[in-house]
Amino acid sequence: LVWPCAIMAQTSGVDLGGSIKTRTDVQTFVDLSQDIGEIRNLVAQNQPEEAFRIYREGQHSEIQAGVKRSLKSLADEMVGADPKTPSFLYHLYGQADRTLNLAFDTQKLGYIDSVIEEIFTTKPELAVEAIWIMNVWMYATHVLYNGVYECQKRSQSDNPQLVDIGMAGFDKFIALWIGGGQQPGASNGDSLYAWSQLQGEAFGTNDPESQVNTRIKLLYSEAVAVMSSKDPCTTDNPNTAGRLWR
Image (cartoon, rainbow, N blue to C red; front, side):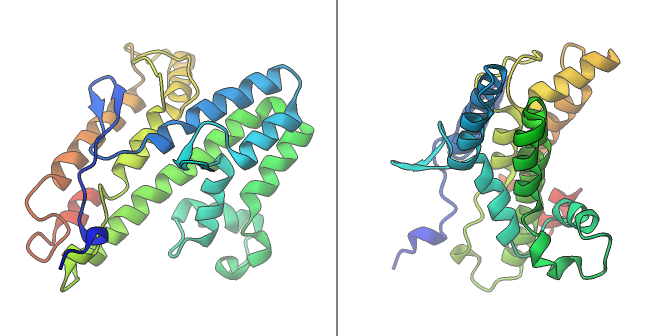
């Protein structure tokens, strides 16, 4: 009996440039950078309503034929996640007036969308930066945290082959970080990589790549090596999660 959902399938990866190629197909996350570029252009053309529509409904990224992935959906997924990512809870804590019941404050759980909508309405010129921080960056940390969490669960499972964790979130993370069409060492682009390049230029530390980008690409390569070891995230290799966490 074959359990197709249980196999850590090695599907075709995505070439992100700069010697980075994912092990799995994460094109749908790569394409979200095109939505950010579209939003940037629409805001510059004084069309914040259309830009907000793309944020909510999606434009270039497809989960499957006819089904789009939107930037808003990243926030929605974090709201429904269990456990929730520390960075998500940290900001929820602030939104909930620093009460101790932050994990149960359901009225505040949708704070990302509330903030983004307010920015589109009042200061649309800040929309791209807000989406980078509150949707893309926070979701990127979410998939890493969740990936290590699922790896640990799989390591304790009697039937780890029934638990598909793919690349434990690292492919999704690097796809969101670099995006599509990004030139290595360039600050023009619509991804977190490009944003990091801009910060590096401001501090005069790019060489030609920002220190953050260089470090993240190195850490991604190390994570790929860990996940390529024999029987990762199983009782035969129980230290995988610990190695990924470091």
